[in-house]
Every structure is written in structure tokens, then in C-alpha cells.
Image (cartoon, rainbow, N blue to C red):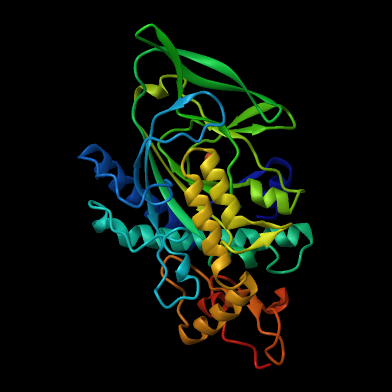
Length: 386
Ligand SMILES: [Fe+2]
């Protein structure tokens, strides 16, 4: 892992190998296979109706979508299986804008339990990886993982139908100073020519993404040092990448451009993939940016959210206490509810504690007494005797 985290600082992505006998990675492989199989069945046997709570594309089932930063058409549908919070949880007032509602999409019931288990495994891997990054950068324990604990999480299943007939071509696309070669298809549509790709080159918003699974090896990361695309082969591993907000907070970490090529006949068949997006708690702020609000600003810029959604998100975050107060309330809640919330591997009490005497903002715990995230007692802690 140390080596992978080292490459992360330079390239912006890392590969977690599941080789060896890591029971957690074995569980991840089994769950991703089962979820992929069920999602494929859902998309080929009759698609779900678009759910009502999809105005921002954050939850439920959404047809099509376009995250491309450039003028390339993308055709895909996606299904987000969210992790709702219990009503009594101090962060539950942020449901459903930031955390999903208790929403069941028709056709997903039989595999909802597996999807939630996959959520939990990925939450654990996220926090474990963030703790390693903190160590690598010489930061205090919880400097990155602390704000991400109990943050918004999206497990998103993407379906890309086979591309319409046309001419395969490689377009050179300028993104953030890189000239990216993207394999796509040129369509002659009633005299109008348009370019279609699987996924156009982009950088992820938010803090962290896992590229959990795909049915082909067409995902590419851009190596900005060598100015070449790097393919991401399928296998017993998953890829993680830094997102823009994390780079703003820690400029030594690079947010990589990535995309999905449609060359070599890969555009002729349906494609599916699974991603997992890990955000900080919505009220976490840095340099006067509140990340939950920034997230909705970016969603609006991409056409997923409206200005009204952004205003609503901003009001929601401002309406209640600041993040430090919410951490204190969550510490109390976790004391009364010792098991982690379904879909999460750890609570905020792994990273924070009340100060002696109980007053003021919460303090970060020490790395030395943190214990392993894989030990349930260390994932959600009882308060220190002080
Ligand atoms: Fe992405």
C-alpha cells in the first residue's frame, strides 16, 4: 500500500490489489460480481422507471447524462444505490439532498442487501486509504479521513448501450492543458455530424472516487507528467483517484483526467461499470468553501442541478449547526448507538473526541491508539475516560 500511496501523490490514482489472502478484498470481489450481474439483468430485462428523486442525478435511476467537460455526446443511464441515515442521526436533516432518502427502486430489492454490504466495504477501504495518505503526507491522524467519516457516499451503476453505427475516430480534446486522444464515433445524423464517446475526459468533483468494476478495459487515466494515456485493465483490483476538492485542500495530491475510449470494437457492445464516490460531510469547509455547497455548484455547472437546488443545498447546510457542533452531536449519538450505520464502516468517533471538560470544538484522536479499522471496536469508539 505504501508504494501505491506514493504513486498517488504523483499520478493521482492508485490500484488496490486483491491478490493475497485479504478477506475484505475477497468480499469486495464477490459483492461487485453479484451487484454487476443483478444490475445487468435489470437493464436488459426491462428498465426501471425514472425515480422521482433524481433531479440532480444523485439518487435513483436516471436516463442518460453528460459529465463531459467538452462538446462530446455521451449516452448512458445510471442507477445510484444510496445509504440513507436513520431518522434520529444528527446528520439526517441533510436527507435527501446530501444523503439519500429511504428509496427503493423497483427491481433492486433482491440485491439491495448486497449493495449495502458493498457500500460498507468501500467505506472501509476509503477511510483506510485516507489514513495511509495522511501518514504519507505527514499529516495528523484524521486530517483527511476525519472529515470524510460519515460523509455522503454514492454507489453508482452505469449502463452504456452500444453506440449507434458510425465511423470510429480518435478526437484530440483539450482539457486543462492536456491534449487528450479520445476514441469515439463520428455519426452522420441526417446531414448533421456529431461525436459520441463513452465518457469524455474529465476530472472528478468531490474528494475521492473508486472505479470499482467495468465490463471492459477502456477506462484511461492521463499521465500528466509523460503526457500519455494509461489503460486500466480489468482484474482482481480496483482503482481509486483523487478528486478536485481534495487537491484544493492538499495541493501535493493531483486530480487526474480520465475518460473511457470506445475504440477496437468496444463501442459495438453494451458496457457497464460501477463507481463509488466518497464525499466529506456536507458542512465541512475549507478556505471559506463549504464542500456540500460547492458540490451542488459543480452539479449545476454540469447541468445536473438547478440554481434552486444550489440555493436549497446552501440553506440546508447553513440552517443547522457548523460541522464541529454536528461532530459533537454525532459523538453523543454514536455513544447511544454503538453499531456503525448500515452502509458505513466507521463513525466520527474513530477520529474525534470531546476535549477534557467537554467544552469547545472536538479534538482529533491520536494515531497511536487508533487500532485497525477492520476491528469493529476501533471503527466506532466509546469515549475516552477523560
Ligand atoms: Fe470520473
